[in-house]
Length: 353
Ligand code: NAD
Ligand code: DAU
Image (cartoon, rainbow, N blue to C red; front, side):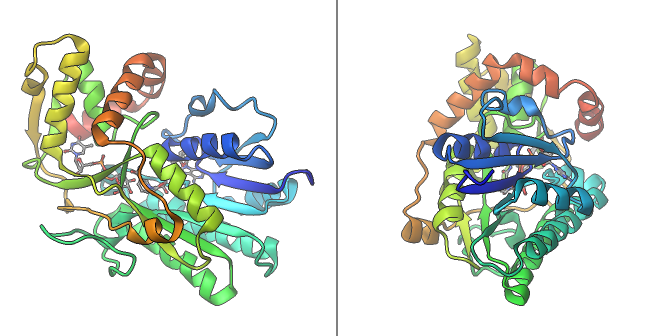
């Protein structure tokens, strides 16, 4: 245990972004012990890490972040030196259906981790607690402007309210107890291993299977999309070189309306599936809008670029093409995550809209 230069607890490592973060850490830092702590909810899948889980410096612990005794035991058993906290309930539509799981995991679970890290590290500042958060805490933009780190918090969905609350607790632990925290607030990610309830993987899945493509409202809401591996590289930079007590926005300056994006995916997949161009667009179905649907998100990541030299590495069109290829080539993964309660959820969320 002593031979590792850091023993990093990554929460939510079996999820979409967490699995990319773990893969990157294992590749770049073989002298770290990486402990993946995950409850394995519907969104967590150990298959996401099947290419790296036999590495000698990787461990997995199935634990709920609200379980204080179990978390304390993990800190003690692995002598945890640092935390990268990603575990969360992450889907806005689910938070509208039932906010309480979001309060429990995102708020109570985060405070539980903060409290245990504070007690275990006993005031020593030779540690990092990196909290991974979202741009949704800033609310919704009009046609102009970008979110900066000093934009006031204005969360509007139960999901973003729970993430905003967790951000406030992270800052409170820094100011009150001197816990060495760092924070990042990122825009929408896309890439491999993304659960097919979110816009891009859901559309890929439905285009492939000739199912309706549910576009909320008029499809004119705007999101700023970032390649998930670029988010992982930003977390790496902030975790290692970011200033303690600071927040960093992460985003790709890559704004698309939902309908433009869905049409782009339709054409891309028509090409890849050998369909006539325009065929998949016929599947587009406008459905009832999301309640309280935030109009536009767009991130100013200047601070991260200037202080830490981070930049996105890949163009959206190229990243989307790679993403579609990954889904088409990994049908066993898709079948695994869409079995069980997925169809029930899908029917309830989309077909009744
Ligand atoms: P995800 O839903 O794919 O994965 C979440 C993971 O957390 C899953 O493996 C799940 O099993 C685990 N988990 C959930 N509840 C838990 C609990 N109580 N205890 C332990 N583990 C639990 O989410 P994601 O999209 O990978 O997001 C990861 C983090 O990044 C979240 O904090 C999210 O708010 C943030 N974020 C996501 C995006 C995005 O576009 N997806 C953008 C910015 C920030
Ligand atoms: O901005 C960062 C956030 O991005 C993260 O914090 C969240 O965890 C992540 O889920 C994501 O939230 P969004 O609500 O923006 O992502 P989602 O993929 O659910 O929706 C993207 C846009 O597409 C949004 O405007 C709603 C719309 N949409 C979504 C789905 C699932 C549709 O039109 N149809 C759909 O079926």
